[in-house]
Length: 274
Image (cartoon, rainbow, N blue to C red; front, side, top):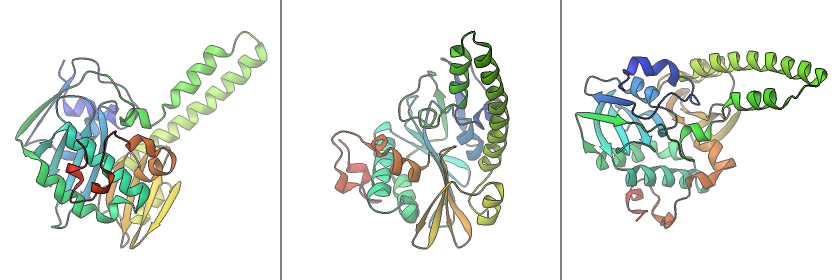
């Protein structure tokens, strides 16, 4: 079954939403808008997604994929320019995670990483992505916890004790309020793009974690596994999942066997994995 980008977008505003059943597909053309595509990719099929401004002042958008025959899509100024292989998507992801965990956040060298990504892309004018609906431990869906899981479990496990039932239902009401606020916050954060001011982001909700780096700051939101690199008072890069969060809490997510980690630089990452 084919779904339009517009039809997928509403569900994609929630990173943990699951809406790609086996047989779903999405066709991306030169007329497709990069931001819409990035948000339309099912969370269980996405390895990562980011938006940034490169060294030439162009808007570069990227989505890495765990599903489909394509490893990733690269856009310049909101238009599709090419694809990358699964090998390159994994190496690009792992090496930037390694750099963030051991040296400094990759966003500090984002322009160089983007240049090498564009150089490795195979030109494309149209790509059809066919989703299986399956997820992997590296997908955005796997990284971001589903807030419904705990509530469903508590309702199933509450038993027949009247006090437990009352307590559980009260908690369910509170959880519903929390979810509504969470969804509203996420929708607002999902609209943040490079060029937006730091003050505008902080006005939505103050960061849950911060990394002070040379020349800027990384504003992280672990609840949504989102982060923004800010320099000179403006957002320079938006990233999901949050590499700051993962490098501190679950750096193993970046691990790939037989990686030559010393090659994990903005210039040599493509040769780091066999």
